[in-house]
Structures are given as structure tokens and as C-alpha cells.
Image 1 (cartoon, helix red, strand yellow):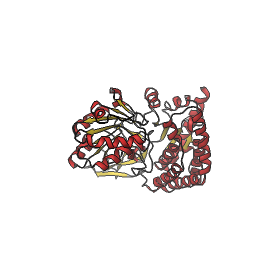
Image 2 (image 1 turned 180 degrees about the vertical axis):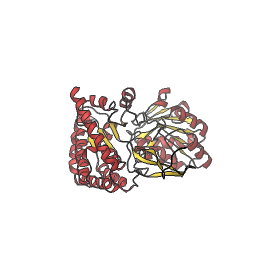
Image 3 (image 1 turned 45 degrees about the vertical axis):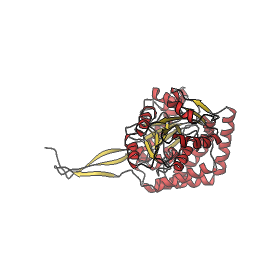
Image 4 (image 1 turned 90 degrees about the vertical axis):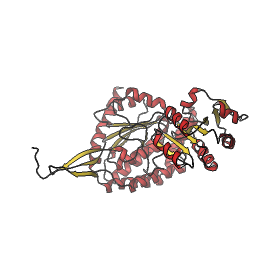
Length: 422
């Protein structure tokens, strides 16, 4: 434990020193680093696939759940998306140094706000090698240093990606300590990282409920986080049927192991008898188990994978081909159910009624609220952020997918001509 403390403190010291260099780095250098990393990822795609294959082999041997294997897999598309995400980040305006809200005061001074980096960001994540690149790219562009502690499941892939990030930073004349991947898989490293208040300004956890619950209990460093992804789709009785089927199927079946996957489907009573049977046929092809309230169960009697819902189902993030289904009277009951059971991550309504859509947007208290769109769009890349460092369902500082602006803060700046206070 003593060796791990020494190791983590050394990383923290290096990150703090690098954060000062990153805060003053110009936009051209940061963009050059991002472009160099993207090019290196494309160049070394075969090396990354080989490293990922080692991780997958070990993960299967250790009995890793299918949802985690899905997150761990680095497909050709995922590799291309990582590189494209870096290029998108490079193309975004640099927020650092931007001055806004400048106003003259009666004394003649000008008062405004300047956007500045947070400093050192510690990121703790599990079987998601793409996070290594997404987090590195966002931290570089936002002028932060970062300490990345990926899960042991992805250690080979994370180390291969870390080498490419360091190559890109060095090529742009930036300190390679600006992005450091923790090399030990010992869980004690996490315990040290989340208490290093002298070196780390913010912790961003991206992982399962167990990890985040541990961090909530033990962390001394402030966090940007979300605990669960209990996402809803409500199909209104003014929904266009084809659109409703497409959204409800995609929101559940596009991927099961992500935090923006739908876990509860709510259907208006007037449309439920017509809509639920064809929707169930789509789910049957994917072997989705439906946990239904009595009204939905009666409509879907005979569905081969039907179970009666219990109260816990409305508060469960399955990350699996399981879906809770409930029939509700109207949009008011749907909003009430969501605000009681949602994890405030992402919720969507399918409707052609403008008034109901606007009411849903106003009254559902979640980080992302959607109309006629799959919850799977709740993602930094899809939102045009280039990538995301995580999702926040907190209400302070950052909310929803956290991109460049979420990794910055504001400080007041004052411009004067020698004024003194009377």
C-alpha cells in the first residue's frame, strides 16, 4: 500500500505540474496533439485490435458479463469513432480564455467572466477502452491534465492507447504527463486517487453502480457523476405508430449495456392495445424479457418471455434484454412515474402533440429530455461535443453529457484604468 501511495502521489505531482503548462497552451498546439493522436490510432489499428483481443480473452476466461464484454470490445467502428471524435474536438472552438458578460460599472471598471480549466481531472472507469481516448481528447482541448484509471479488464488496450496519446502530446510540444494512465490494476490506487485533494480537482467516475457507490462513500475530491441509467420512453396516444415502434425498439435493443438504454416503457392506455402487440413482436425476435404491469400483461398474454412486474422493476437498471412495461392513463401520469422512478439521466416522449411534447420537456426533471427520439442519442458524440467525459445527472456545474465546457470553470475578471474604491 505504501508503494501505491508513493506511485499515485508521484503521478499527482506530475499531473499538477502538467496542468499549469496545459492551462497556458495555445489552441494550435492542443489541436495538433489531437490530430496526431487521431492519425496514430488509425495507423496502429491492428496493434489496438491485438491488445483488445488479449483483454477480451482474459475477460471471457474470468466470466465477465455480456454487457461488460460489449463495452470492452474495440470494433473497427469503435476505433474509427475514437479517431473521428478527436478530430471533432479539434474542430470545436477553444473555450479557454473566452471572456463573456463584460459590463461597465458606475465606477468605470469593466467586470466580466473568463473561462478557465478545472486543473487536474481524475477519471475512473471500467471496461471501456474508448474512454481513454475520449477523456484524453477533451482534457487536452480544455487545457486540463488528467489521470486515467481504467479497469483491469482493459489494461492491454488502455496501455496501447496511452502510448499513442503520449506520442501525440510530445509531437505537439506539450508535456506527456498531461495524460497519465495508471499502470497498476490494484484497486488501492482508486482509494488513493479519490482522496488526493492537493493534486486532483475533480473525479469523474464512469462505471457500474458498485464503483460509483464506493466513490460516493470514500471520495474527498468533488465528483461529476451519475449513479444509474434508468431511462424511460413514453408513447403518447397522439404518437405516430411507426415512429413509436422505431424509437421504442431502438432505445432498448440498439445496445443493452449502456447507461442511455431504455429500461422502462410507458404506453398511453388509449394506444396500448394497438401498439404493444406489434412492438412485442419486435422484442420477441431479440429475446427481450418483458416485465409488465397487470394491464400490459393482459394485452400481451401469450408473449413467451412475459413476467409480472414487481415494484423493484420500476427502479432497476437491467443492462440486459429485460424491459419493464407499464400502461398509464396519459402524459400527466407518465411524467409523475418518471419523476418518481427515473435516475434523471434520459427520458423521451413519442407524440405528435406539440403541447404535450413541450410539457414533457418542461416537467421531466432529467439531464436529457427528448421528443420523438431514442434515448440512445444521449451521448457526447451524438450531441456534437466530439466526445464526452461522462454523464452527469447532478444539477451543479455540469448536467448531461459533459464535454469541453463541462471541464471548465469561470472566474471573474476586472478591467480598470486606475480606479480606487471610495
